[in-house]
Amino acid sequence: MLYSESHNRYVYLLSPDDARQLVAAGEPLAYGSDVIRGFNYRVYGIDLAAVGARNVRETLIGKP
Figure: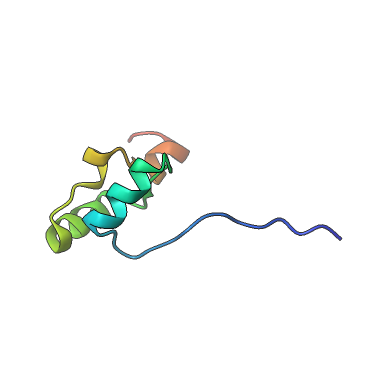
């Protein structure tokens, strides 16, 4: 039986340093909803969309 190994990393909030490192490494970033994007901004002062992260819901089902 073959097992696939996931290379995804899931975090609750993304610090500015972590975001910069991931962007510099060319890693794709995504967030689960605009609520999470806003919460991350309130906690860390970083807008995930401004650093190139995509909204997963919009990516999967399109914009409302």
